Image (tube, rainbow, N blue to C red):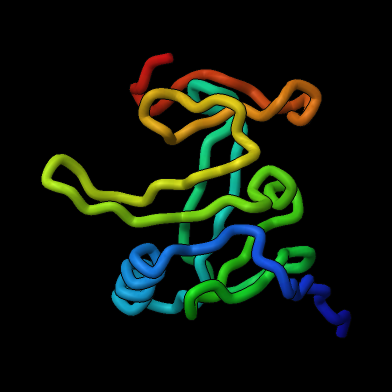
Length: 137
């Protein structure tokens, strides 16, 4: 049996605000068979990358795994450099509610905030743009 290497971190890549952690804990409790928040980026969106937040059963080999505000968080190794120092908040207002990511690595974001762009030379060559979310530049 081969041991899986999971990178435990003492510093957090992505931090959660208390409001985000409370909402995530509530959502995890309502889901079956999940125990961690997975934060990732994917190619696409108006500005080049888009954020992905989801639940998972646990970390897989190579993931960075740590705890923030009492929530177990996992970040894949591809996403980690683009998310280092980012924070996730949960906002609930009369007009809207949802998660908001503040990413110091983003040099620009689309109007809806769901996609972002990094400094030139920071993005891998296979990153693609294009808006699938209905937002505009």
